[in-house]
Image (cartoon, rainbow, N blue to C red; front, top):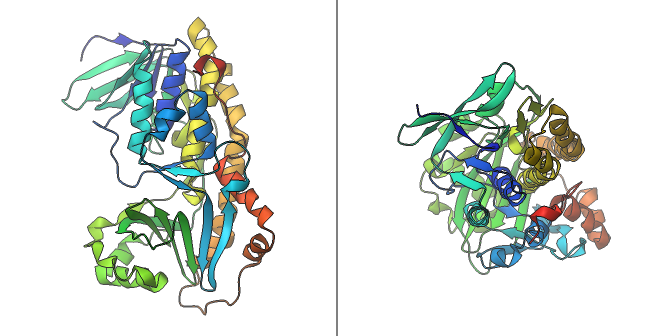
Length: 410
């Protein structure tokens, strides 16, 4: 192991929360080091939605024009496909602000953009292929991390603050012994891709039928597809084989029949083990958890990235000054949780309602007669289009959007 190194803030995890926090703190003049265990940001089926509140943040950071140069799709309508036909669900054109759409962009492009901006700051450092293996402690206080690089080199990086942005299976969180409250979920998700033709529906489309749910996300040349299965049923459903899977998808969405063979085997179908949980306390002395490390979100609404980025903005605004001055205390860390707890709890509350009242009931009605008619909420949204602004705003902007602090604006 090499001699211990020193920084002011070490961030475990180079996802959206970690990269945005690193950039903002660096723009405040804080020495910050981001440790990312992978060699690059390339991942299949990561959350690829950049919501209006995040697009506004990019503008405030002076990165809006750079983002526009990144190839992406824009979605301004959310629709559901029922047995009775396609119905509107959310209309982004009715939400406040400049950006009235969701941008669909590979997450690696978004992260590369933030990393490029970070490298322009003299106090920013990003180390790829570097995994956090455990916390360094002095008594009860977290004083840094131990790490291992891809070539097997190990070391210690000491810091005034460690921020866990390393996801729902966070090594840093586990090392601090922080416990979470878990909420039951009715489903897991199978992710796969299918070719898309120009004549196919555009934007995001949810398909609901008796016992089955799927979501198609328009990625231009292909659909990113999510097929929901009952929680814990992955092994059972996989045992039915690829042909049974293809029949399931085509039965639910018949017009995919001409391309379903693009899924050559169930190796092309990736499982997302859905969790919905939240830490009771997001911090320990010298450690803060944000994003999925603090609150694992359901994929419902695709809002996980949105919340993670907003956590990062709030943390940077609250912690930059005490980190600069060397006066950081547990009270400062508690302020971050107080700021972000309510929007997190409300968003998870809405997801729990959807799990129970919509997804749980739908997935639990396999082989039952398909109910007739259109659900009342959909009928109301269709009859009174102004109401479509409500789900669009909740998904696109969220409960408590955060804005870039003055020190980070360009």
